[in-house]
Image (cartoon, rainbow, N blue to C red; front, side):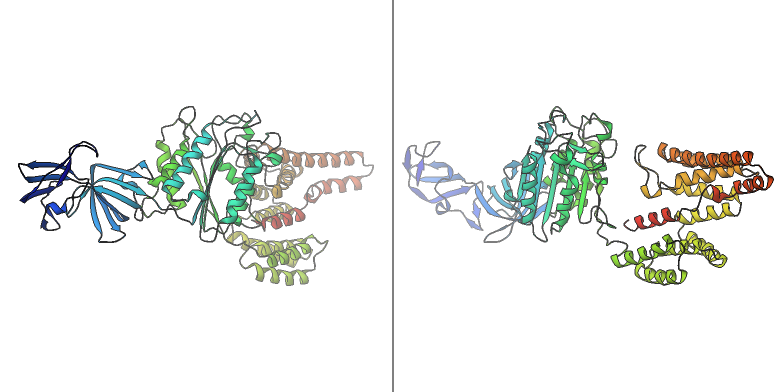
Length: 608
C-alpha cells in the first residue's frame, strides 16, 4: 500500500506491505454489499488511518460517495432517487444535510419530483443512506414563458421615482427562472425600458408562444388614467400630460395576451404603489385598472386571461424599507418559489397562486392593508349573435316609426325571438309596439305583456317605467309615484360619487322629475308629501348628477304650469280660459312616454 503522509496530495509517499489478514474499515463499516471489506476495496484518494508494524494490520478509511439521478419522490425525511442506471435508492435527509436548489440554499420541502440531483453521502451499503449534501437543479420547461417589467425611473419628474420596481421585478424573475422552471431564454426581464423597447419586446416574445404554453406577465411601475377613463402603463420616457401618446395602453397589453394561443395567461398588475398620485382622480388601485378594461361587444374584458391586482380600491402597494420589497412582489416571488404549490406537483395554477397571495399578504409585515383581487376569465360567447341583433334592430325600427305596422312588427318579433332565444330584448320592444298603438285592444295587450315580464324578471326597468306612465294617464298619481320610486331605486348606481350615470338611462331622471312635480302641484288632489319625499330620497341616492337632472325635470313642469296660468289669466273669454284649465291638468302637456330613449337603452344593452 502506498500512503501519502501529507495533508494534501504531493506529500511524503510511504509504501507499506499488507498483512495477509489486514482488516479494512470504510466509513465505519467492515461489510460492503454483504461481503467483508478487503484492501482491494480501497481507492486512491481515500482518507485513511493506517495501523501497522512491519506490515499493515488495519486501515480505517473514509470516502465520500456520490449519486446522480432524478427525484422520484420527496418524503418527509428524505428523497427517492432514480439514477441514470441502476436501482432506485431511498436517501434520508437529516438536520445536518446541506441542501441547495439552483445553487441557492433550500429546504427539503422546496424539492420536487423531476428535479435533477447530485447526492453526497458516506454510508455505502446502508439500506437507507443519510445524505450529507443534496445539490438539486430544476430542469427548464420549454412550454413556460414570462415577461417581467419593472419601471421606477422616469424622465418626467411628475412621476414619483419608484426604486422598489426594479428590485421587485428581479425577485419575481429569479423565482420564475430558478424555481418555476421558466427557461432563461424565455423569461424576459425589462428594467426601466422606454416605450418603444417595452412594446417591441412584448410583441416579439408573445409571437413565439405556442398553443398549450403558459405565459406569466408581471408589471411593476406607475400607471395613469386619461380623461376618457383609459389606463396607460408608464414607460421610462412617458409623460404624464400625454399618456395616450407616450404610455402603453393597458387595454393593448390585455388584447395582445388575449390574441396569444397560450393555454394559460396570467397578468399580475402591481401598479398602485405608495406614495399615491398627487391627483386623487389618478389614484387608481390595480383592481380599478382591471375594471377599466373593455371586451368586444357582448363579451367580458378578460376572456382567456386571468388578472391579479396588487391591491383593492382605496389601497396602495405597501413597501418594506426605502426600496422594498413590495408586499405583492414578495408574495408572488415566494409563491413561484414553491410556497403556492400546495399539492407539490410542480405546477402553479393561477388559483393556487392567488390562494397563496391571500394567505401571505395579510401577514406581510408592512404598514397598511393591502388586499389582492382576482379577475377570472369569462369566455362565454355574446348573449346575442349578430343575426339576432340585426332582427332586434329591425323590430326597434317599428317602435321608432311614427305609427308601427303591428302586422309587420309581429312578424319581426317572431323572427327576433326565435334568434334571440330566451333573451329579453325582443319582448321589451314588442311590448313598446303594443303600448304605442292607438287601439285600446293592443294597449290592453301591452299591459298584460309587461305584467308577465315584470313577474318573470322583476329587475327590469322598462315594465316599471310603463306602469308608472299608465298610472299617470289614468290619474292614479299616488300609485304612479310609488312605481317611479321603485323604478329609481332599481337604476344601477355609480360605484363612486364622481362616476357618471349610465348614459342610456340618464333620460329617466328628468322624466321622473316632470311627473313628480305634476303629481305634486298640478292636480287638485296632490300626492301626500311622504310619498314624494321617498321618491326624492331614491333619486338622491344616485348622486348629485342625478339630482340635477331630476330638478331640471321638476322645473320644466313648473315652467309649463306657469305658462298655462299666464295664458289663462290673459284669456279674454271664458271658453278659452276653461279649456286652458282642462289642458293644464293633462299629464301629456308636461311629459310623454320616452319611446325613443327606451329603445336606445334596449339596443345599448344588447352588447352587455
